[in-house]
Image 1: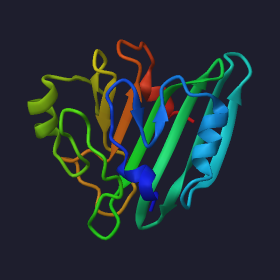
Image 2: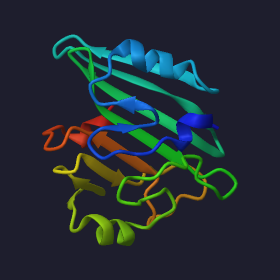
Image 3: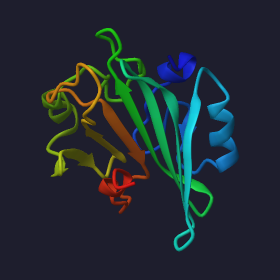
Length: 165
């Protein structure tokens, strides 16, 4: 699931799944064509020029979901959901500081320090990374995040709005 994209390193404030903050929509669409990804949806907001592209390789058993928020044609947030499949997280890449899917929130706090917590999202804005649990997948654990957000360091984006679609 996800192939090489799922083993790309996770670089705080910069990139995940082979996508980078600042990429164009064309780059996102070309990432879609790699691996066994399906396009789940593209939503635009005429008032703000924001665009939300959702794709992945997800089944009822789990898989990989990628949501990208573009603002003025450039990627501003990348959300990766790595939902357990047969007891394993499909996304194998690690952050520069050593977090990998399957690690606990406790380990995140050991690595990154005290997070800003809001509605279950552990944010490290100065690093450009946040972690949370998206429920609904089989085998979801409250102790282990299955979702990472990458955004520009010190970004003022409201990550909760990524869920309000």
